[in-house]
Length: 476
Image (cartoon, rainbow, N blue to C red):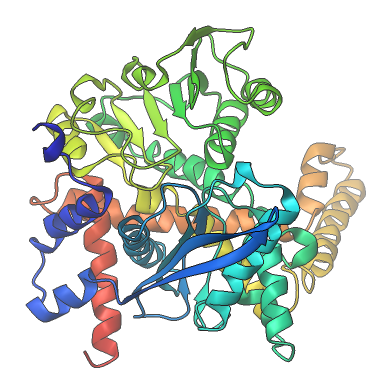
């Protein structure tokens, strides 16, 4: 009976949406228009593999077209179903609105375990899935732009982009049909690390405000903070790596599918990642304590908990035992609505997924713009910027020599100041600015309104208001 009370992922998204709109003055018709998913396409297609035809089921859901194109990843996993894809598409709508990327929300999925297939087989399956979506304009630079998600990456995005180009031979913007591509296939520097980098920037912004840290019972900076990461995939790995090497945090726990590692002195993220790549899991790693029942480590004492894998890992059953004062949702929907309520009552601060993991869609936006403009960022201005800085340095050093001041600029400063911003620096700058602006919009609502007690409702209020204004501008 207790299990039946746990809301599904889609129900959780709807419940959280309802909490926010209850505090808004939206016309009932507009509220319903924002809530519902516009369309979901289900495709079943066959591919001849290993001497027989195998049938696969895939989805592409469009939640909101208040702005176009719509944006959202494609995941390859056996758990993919229509409800999950529609919930993720709704989250994409709110996420894009919160970080002010000009997209509606979409999501796709293929019910497949990619580990069961050879690379050439996966390519045939991916291209056929892409074909089914492309011919219905469910992949299109101006209408629907996918990206990587669970089980997919640069390789799959390159296959999809090539399939689109084959079917649209005169579309000069064909590379913009999908983001998350490899650099040599029209990608952008910093995209692979983007979601993990966004988690880092989100935490840095949170720790800039004493009032916000106090709400979680924390003080100081990220330096020395004890962090547990659940899921050392692309997002979890990059977030953990950046926070430990650049901010001085201690990664005291890493949870994977085969168990978890705990070490109060801190784990070496790169070494654990290499061990997982070599053995398929964390078991057998030569440092720290191995815990077979990995998810129990979510309940271990720490300062910051980062669920970075799948939805629903923190729920009504284990939330009462979670002791972390601050949770940042690097995955989509890792805390259910039931778990969220329990944690809020305990005083836990949750930095919500629609903000925390928006680094991916933000840098995807930069890649899309790069593909449409057909020029890499920094190409036009980088050397001119360096020349202007060099002229200033030369003049300062000439004045010092003429006046006999005897001072010189330190080499480190000169090297840093004279180097013009390339694509990676510009991408990181844009991502940092985006995460800061979105957090400030959220925290303003969180602190200024007496009826808003947590960041999740604040995030929903900001994003739903922006979606509503976009619909009103269309005349709805």
